[in-house]
Amino acid sequence: MAWAVAALAASGLPGCGWLPRSAIVPMPVDRDASACGPTDTLIVLLPGRGMLLGELSTEGFIDTFRAAGLRADLVRADAHMGYYKDRSVVDRLRADVIDPARAQGYRHIWLAGISLGGLGALLYADEHPDEIDGLLLIAPYLGEPQTAADVAAQGGVERWRPPAETDDAIGVRAWTCLKRYVGPSAARAPLYLAFGVDDRLAPTHRVLAPALPPQHVLTVAGGHDWPAWRPLWQRLLAEAPLPRCTGPRP
Image 1 (tube, rainbow, N blue to C red):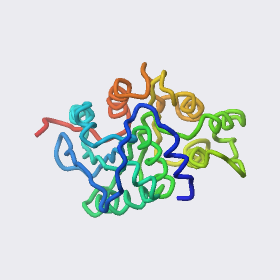
Image 2 (cartoon, one colour):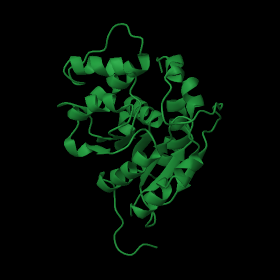
Image 3 (cartoon, rainbow, N blue to C red):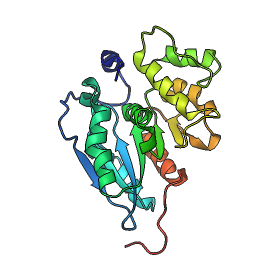
Image 4 (tube, one colour):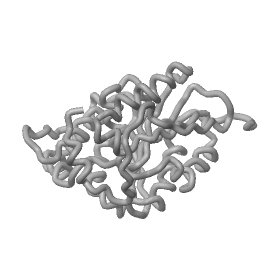
């Protein structure tokens, strides 16, 4: 991935802790089964910067997933900052998560991500668009405010043209990826954007929001932290076109 990792490390993503870790192979994962038995649909959830997989459980994300009544399994991939710093996050997700899932019989795969994880989900879908059925982005990091401002000044992401030179290589890469999901030639895979209205990243999200179908943009009160992310996760699972359990659950 030809983007500036040093800029990402310096970006100071708010709301997430920082614990330097080395990328290991294979990428660790935690798995949670569907509420209603075997399924061919998988949701891959990528954490935010500094998050441990256990936090997704203690903060209620797994209970919410189980209560949603989805005929889908969930994998929490430990795609921490180390994989972004060594530029291996997309390759490791494919080798350690997506390809094994296909081998296990999953036919439909959705990517979900919080903050940094939202960026990771977007990058993966951009490099392997035919492998992903949808994106659920919670408060995604989309680069620095000046890049979003440039997108807005040019009339939105569909009309925006990347600059020849930039100090925000990550932001330019993110918005270039997003162009796939807007306009008449938009990707078939739906993209959902969810964020707190007081999130410090919300100004960038508000630039993207008008380019998406209104029903694909979810907001709640709150900032870049769990009190906003928990209800957003619940609403995403309720509103995205994911398969549902029918009849009594096992």
